[in-house]
Image 1 (spheres, rainbow, N blue to C red):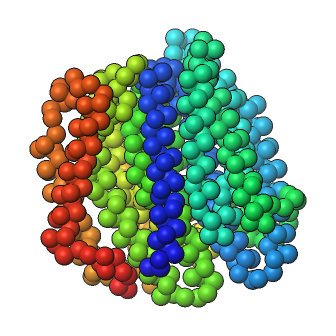
Image 2 (cartoon, helix red, strand yellow):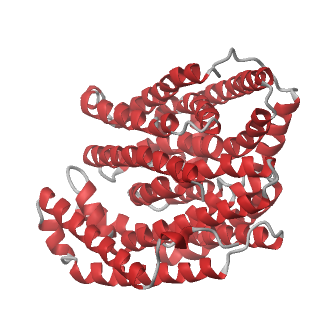
Image 3 (cartoon, rainbow, N blue to C red):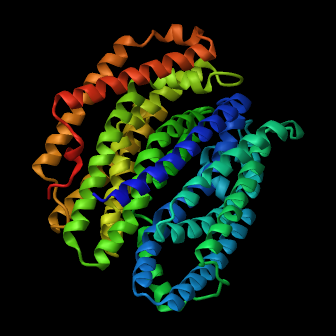
Length: 519
């Protein structure tokens, strides 16, 4: 494990931490303004569709296809070729996503019907719930252009990441959160439906993220005039890698979107409860899993280009150990403190204790999949960095199919919670398949030391969970607490859990050298 890699991971984690904290503030503002009712369902759907595309293209397929090719071009040492490649990829991507954004705005009624089929059925039957379909169609026209801004911002961030400049791109989500919070505070009273103010916050936030990165591109000397380059060999390589990758790393997001579609049939509140629980899941996932994945892909790409198989395997080993020591206790904490966290962060205004209890049930189901989501983030780059997109896409298709089967089996007895359970199960299946393929191809195999470390982490996390559960006040007391008391009590429990976990790890002999790769 190189110091440089750890330093890059810390930089991304710190920036992501700031973003996630503001994200929780943003979600608290949304919960206070909209609660978990019909208006919340509409905005969250209108926001989820372009965000799904963002994760699919920006954080998923595009990054996984683009960064290895960019690394290869950069390492060739031809500065003119590098600038030409950046010009052609930015021009080609820009034109495509502009077309997609315009198409999305025009076809918003079709998108709303597709991803909120339950509301559309009510609309066709002239039922009261049909109003949600009409509002979602209109709101999508405001939120959908976000995909244009964030795709170009994602391209800029990928370029900077490849140049080992991670901080600026990791900071940009802060601007989105500030934009939504500001619009909620200052514009919500200007609309009969306050969700429209939040939608404009999404639009403005996407534009702000793109504009913020331009000076950093100029400073790095890679801001070039965009050119169309569909037939360029390097663009063709990115295209070839990207098309199958659409179903690879982004399987989890596809599953979450399918959950939303099914949840539209489960009554008012289901989409919102799943959203609020997913937002808490996203905090550790973004802070640890995505942060580590962000720095590991360029590093693995360099290892592959240099044909350094040992460094490649060592870096995967380091990434897996890091997500395990961070992800397993985080998942345990989410399960044990699900309702106290939701009550502390969201219970005010239109968000009731009942909404917190409903969201907590799905959060506990999601918590079982947190480690799997993280492992997918760090295992998939083991394929994409070697420009192998076929293997992850094959597994991705299998897991999507499995997720739908799990949904059908679990939604009947467990309602919307069954959707969260199914998502966690399919994520575990995806992570298992990715590791199996790396092991089979002798790219990476977990050593005995790594497995022993994993066992110690699990035992420590279980002890932590038991202690925190025993020391936590009963839920009736949590509901009655004032906000500041809730915050203090929650931080005390988190600090206690951290102390128990670290103490248990030290007692079992875990030290800094335990995270050095043994492969």
